[in-house]
Length: 472
Image 1 (tube, rainbow, N blue to C red):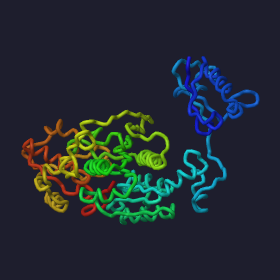
Image 2: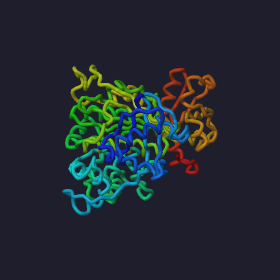
Image 3: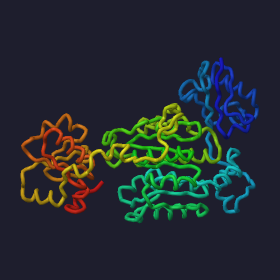
């Protein structure tokens, strides 16, 4: 029977550089004996002089630790994979490169890796990457690209650092609150690696400027958090022939891939159309585990470095899914859609379009939704006017902060529970910032209710009416 033995990078020099070896054997021990017979140098690395497996070496059969089965006596069957997993900690060897003395020291751990080496490091030094966003994904992405020695690192962002960013946006610090994210990001990246040229674009990415911003960069890394910008990034990359290192996050789950690369699918091949407005909540509405963008943004950085240095197998044609709660990874194969409207055989999209309209965000203007300010709401409450103050946030948000006297019906359950409301009474609806409550008002009005939205939501109430109500 044939068993595939996978060798880590640290052991490949003792196996003629091979990543895997097909061998015969009925147990893990027999397979290792066959491996040692073929590559004698591995034996000294993995076994003690007494012939026992060294304590810093583990053997897995498929995904199971052999120690939890029968050790090296664990049976294997045809098609199984035996993985040898030693402890690793880096190394130290001298090398020469066309880099400065300081760069030789800084990138030493890259230079001693034969897969990267001096040539790979020079590719990184001569490369340019544009990060779209300096938020949750953009933070680890930019930090690791700067640390790796990418020569020119562009960042597009026009936001300001807020306290709520600090739980996950590690580019920024408490001292940065209130400052433009670009200012904070540039200071942090320059302190990390002064050899990297950090170029900031304090502007919103639009159809009018995307092609001009993207054209001088080798790789575009998408750290956006909304669908219009995501489709804009994709389309601009396709039109310019630029690879797009993609990542997205929500709550405990993340996705990563490489789109728009030559012969590979683009984002539209995977998702031809965006979801209807309001169907998929934003991270501001649904939350996100603080470390999750660290995981996905780091994968984006890895894929970017692989694209630049020509390493390994990038995530082209594959979508990686990560579930942090289950601690599970899945990789799905995705194919180029021959009928894709922008990268297919007969594309119909040949220039950038209005992405707000494409994503359905212009179908109902804000003016069509009746609104009330938090000041007017306070006046109504003080006068004890008759109305229902409806909170459409989630229960855990309600526990964090609430306006006294409000009734909680989460937006997702409103279609089932609107019967609890009295049509004879006016309804004033609020959420965190006004987005979900606007959708609730639209729904309630379609059912014949007199409904009004609170502009700015409970955040505005906290800022301008009652500071004792916490913001989150």
